[in-house]
Every structure is written in C-alpha cells, then in structure tokens.
Length: 82
Image (cartoon, rainbow, N blue to C red):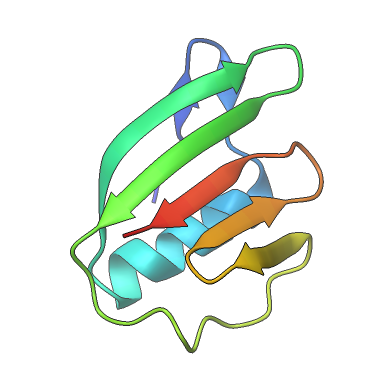
C-alpha cells in the first residue's frame, strides 16, 4: 500500500501499518480522510465495512483508547472503525 499524503501531510509508519492490516486483511475501506494539522502531520481516517477488528496485531506507537478508535503516539493521528 502506498503512503497516503493529503495536503502535505504524510501518514506515519504506525498508521500505515494499521491501515494496511485493516484494508488488506479485514477488507475495510476508507470513507473519510483528512489532514487535521499539517504542522504535525496529524491525520484522521474513518474506515467502514470490513470484518472484525478484535485481533489487530500489536503495532508500535498505536494505542486503542476506545473500542473503535486507534491513535498513534507519534503524530496523534486517529483511525476510527465503524
């Protein structure tokens, strides 16, 4: 999967790893994506339509604070699964 760049914001490696897993292994699709803060490369992704996300492998710098919300600790990017 190619690195996603939006308005000069580039996804960090932890978010790319999470997106690759959810899109390629669990068949989710990106419904919404935008750069929340170009200075920090902070991005937001909303994914829908895939299989469960209960067995996501541990990804360095990714924390799951809510059942369907994942945050990276390096750029504060968010991936929401719905």
